[in-house]
Length: 320
Image (tube, rainbow, N blue to C red; front, side):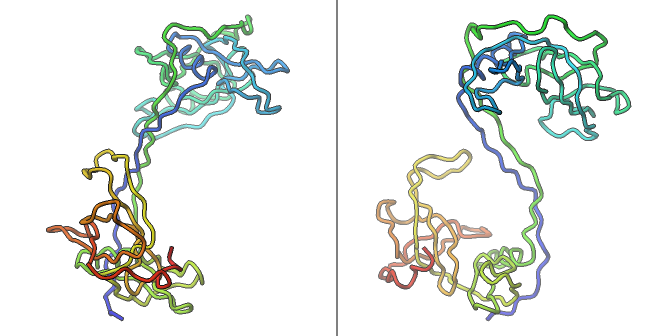
């Protein structure tokens, strides 16, 4: 056992971001293409309800629905909430209201932003209209926002629409992003600090005596707090692995390469890391590996074979 003083708990900004690409069926394609053409389409169910935004299946009966109808670009606020501090990527960069708007001719409400001078200017039941974006591409952002409107409800109801447009939108790419501050906590802060000294430190459960790396501050099996720190490794055994054939954005590693679960000597939980220094098709379960550090690196860049004989399956089968 290694006695290590309690380090400062770490905190750092973390961004999880990826582009989400999806194809569109005929209903969603018509809806988004219609927005590009300043036309709002809904879909009519078998019992006569008009759903906006449109869906491909009736949420009540699960019946497939394809009957498109055009509704008005004006409507009524059914409920709202004031947004005091707009975030990156939201429809407006000044305070605004999130509103559910039931467009004239629709039976359901559409969620979007309302440009209003303050919360006192917003109320349930107020009339609003679409403010179209100057440049439209076939996305929900073609509705820049809603704005107050003094006109009465449209009387024309809904009109059937074929959904046919020139150059229809067939797919979308949505940028998914989550910004937050990550605090690893006492146990993982100690683990990260130790890595910067090229040591791997886990914690032992006082009940089952298993050593967890990375430590979690509590035993996932027994549910009791862990505090006894134990240095493990640095060598370990590949318990299972996968071959990566798709190159990740902003990751300067040529494919194919291998990512593996590695049970470090003395640990009862496998961690994951990249395997290098061996052809990808020669990586195998039981392979003995050791960490490789780069100059100034705070954690191992990858693991490589040690040249030792492969570990017997019985020595790591509980960690697969």
